Length: 342
Image (tube, rainbow, N blue to C red):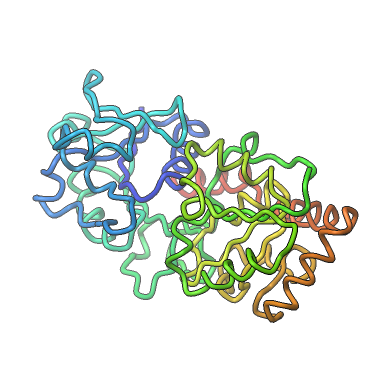
C-alpha cells in the first residue's frame, strides 16, 4: 500500500490529488490533524482572513462545532486514522493522521507540499518518514527552493522546473463539469470567491446596471457561496457567460477550466492570465470578451450583440469547449506523473 501525505490548500486542489493518487493510482491520500505538526515546525501555512481557515485541521477534535463549520463536521477516529466528510464533494472523505499515527504508518511513499512555505519543512518531513518528496506547484512562485532531485508537478507554465518535473492540469470530474448546449444567452455568472474584494468590482456593478435584459449573479457576493461543487457545475451550465476577473490571476485556475469544460465563454481581463496554464482559453471574440481590449461600453455592446444571436453564442461555447479538449488530457498527464514517480 502506497501512502501519500499532503498539506491542505483548497478543496478543488485536494480533490485533484485524490483523483490522481487514489482513483488513478490506487494509493491512499492523507492530510494532517493535531497541533504537533505545527509545534514541530512542519506545518507553517495559514490561510486566515479569506473565509478558508483550513488551518483548524491542526486542532485535533476542534475547539467547538463552529471551528469545523466550513469543513462539515469534526474529524472522527476510523481505525488507525481520522476522517472528515467533504462538504464540497459528498461521498468523499479526507483521511487525517496525527504525527504519532503517521509514525506508525512508516515508511510512507510520498510527502507532498502544495504551498511554497512548506518546501523546506515538508522535504525534512519526507526524510523523517522514509518518503520521497513531491513539490506540487499550483500558484506562480517568485523564488523556489526545490532541488534537482525533487519531483515537481506544476500547474503553472512559467515555473522553470529544475530536475524532474511534469506540467499538468489539476484534474476534476468531467461528468460533473460536462458540456451541454446553453439554454440561455443572457445569464452571466461569476463563481469567484469574494469578487467584491477585487479592484474590478466596479466593472461588474456597471455591467449589472448597463446590460439590460441580462441576469447577472456573483455567487459569494450577490448570492450565497455555492456548495457542493455539483452546484457550481449546475450554475455554470445554467449560464450563458462566465465572468472571471481576478486581479491576482490564477495559478491553475479551476474556475476558468471548469467554465471551458462546460463550454461557456469567459468575460474578464486576459492579461491577468498571461503566461499561466489557462492562457490558451482567453482568445478575444472567440472564447472570451477581453476587457483589456475593449472599453466597458464596447465590451457590453459585444456581449449584447453576440447574445442576440444564438448561432454566434453557440459558436463561442463550442469553441472554448473544443479548445479545452485540445489542451487538457488528464489521462496522458496522469501517465506522465506516474512515470515521474516510478
